[in-house]
Amino acid sequence: MMDVMRLVRDIGGDNMSTKYLMSIKEASEYFGIGRNRLYEMIRSQNDIPMVKVGVHLRINVPLFEQWLDNCAKEGRNL
Image (cartoon, rainbow, N blue to C red; front, side, top):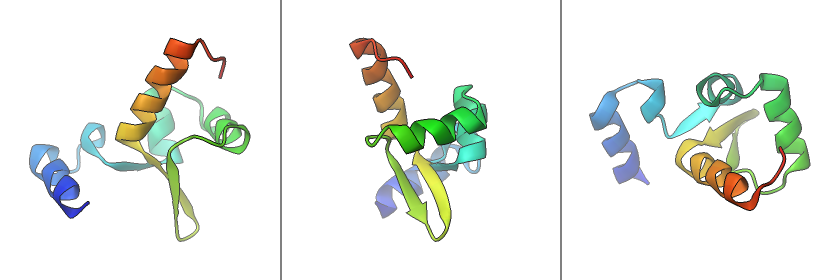
């Protein structure tokens, strides 16, 4: 995990497109999904790759990208 974080930091610093974890607000802006819709998806979809850090939810960016790709391949409605 530390190697991944070091790689992310080395590639782009604090650039949002290279962050490993994003807040709901950041993820909604980055992926073009409304913040409220993203919260609804988290409540209704039990397989969204996210973690709780303290009281904050964080989206795992690489896994969320794969999750979205799989949803598109399966023809799932979000």
